[in-house]
Figure 1 (cartoon, one colour):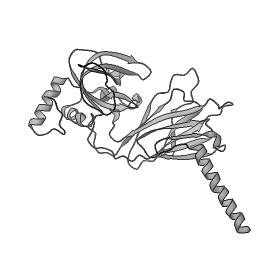
Figure 2 (spheres, rainbow, N blue to C red):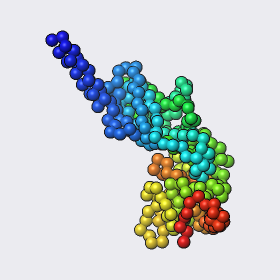
Figure 3 (cartoon, helix red, strand yellow):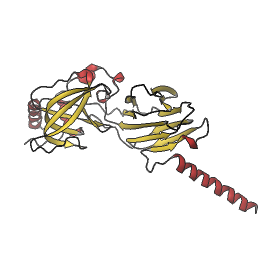
Figure 4 (cartoon, rainbow, N blue to C red):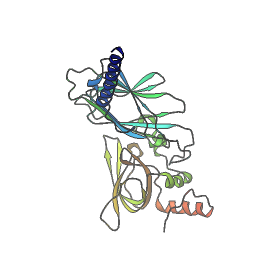
Length: 306
């Protein structure tokens, strides 16, 4: 009987562990997590680990705290992208809180020190902005979410998306506190342009129809008529016209992009589902650069210009 009692106790412990896991973590993969603070004990810290380069976290009815480590299975790329960075092993991460982010504060934990990324919002405050940070090889980073006390937690949900890349650099970041206008808006040199053609999420020839300001993102939205889409990783440029597709590309507001005549080669990255500008030479200048590099057998990849 004594052994039978121990067996019952062990069974109940296993069942409670399974129940707690199912109730607090609804993720079916290692990219996203969805859970409820109602299953957490007061003052507890739940440890979460995700292993993808992008995903989401949804914390319903925040209570206690969460500690999230992001260990994506990606290898930093060397000498890629419009900025021509080297193989430093640096990984850049960005988090985008939802407009209804409530009930918690989000911190970056770097070597045991906490830096506030997103505070708990009140109804009248503006939407939280994207925050980015970088991790060097061997550096210990985590995201720490601390629930804030509220009498009514029924409407509190702390939600954000994250992205990590090994080939972003400062000029690709949306968090303008980390970059200077000079670095963000500097024209690409010939080497950077040729590499951007190979490594960008989109490569498009087109014209600027108009430029609008998005004060929420502190960005300029470039309305583009694309006469040729060489490559797009996601569906960014669409339309029924036989002559051109249409799409939008964003860039930092301080770069002062203005509409003007002429055809450009637009390249860049997709950031939280939106196209962000990398290199954008005039098309005739790109053709000349590409022809010279091809003649010297120094092009990193082919682009079918004909």
